[in-house]
Amino acid sequence: MPDRADTAHSPSTPGSAASASTTEHGGDHASVAATKPAGNWNSRRNRFLLLSGMFLAGIAVVGLINASIDGTNTLEFCVSCHTMDTPYEEYKTSKHYMNAAGVQATCADCHVPKQLGPKLVTKVVAAKDVWHEILGTIDTPEKFEARRWKMASRIWDIMERSDSRECRTCHEFKSMDLSEQGRTARARHARAEERGQTCINCHSGIVHGMPSRPTDDS
Image (cartoon, rainbow, N blue to C red):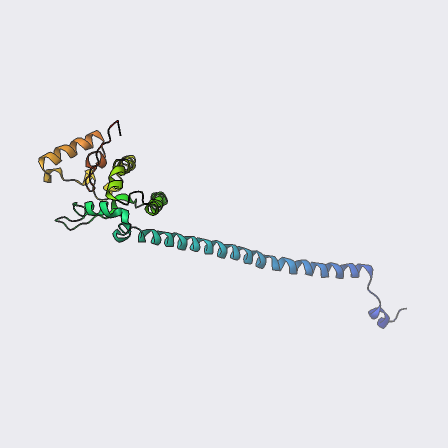
């Protein structure tokens, strides 16, 4: 009959070994499973932080671009080029520069859209003016007058296509009290609204000198 001590210290049976192995591996799997949620959480958190950082950086970039653009919208910046001497002198004689109400519309109010997208397009297109300033394309009154019709026609076309968008920042048919206008203005504004006309159809040359239409020979 085997001694109890021998039985207590005898090697484990195959069944017990398998059980121990299963327990051991089961513990490993449980440990791995326990770490997975933490790993997933860290991954989600990192993605959230990355996307948040990118979003904030995007806002900062747009803000800087908009601030830079606003800096180029000042009257001082617009007239800083020598080629703007003639338009600026004309502008100073207009009601947009000085009037009884003391409301001044600057270059950007009439020529730069308020919406960011169209504003960016306008600024990119206007970059060519720097090149023409360097070339001296219109650096004398004579050169300016020679190209005035072409330049004015291009601006009128832009304004007509946009339904005088910049004009309508301050002037809208629906906001006009026609009874407070003179007889001629009242009749013309009422007729223009009925016909679906836009501001620039009648008010071209209201700030800058009206160019002479070129003849067929020129």
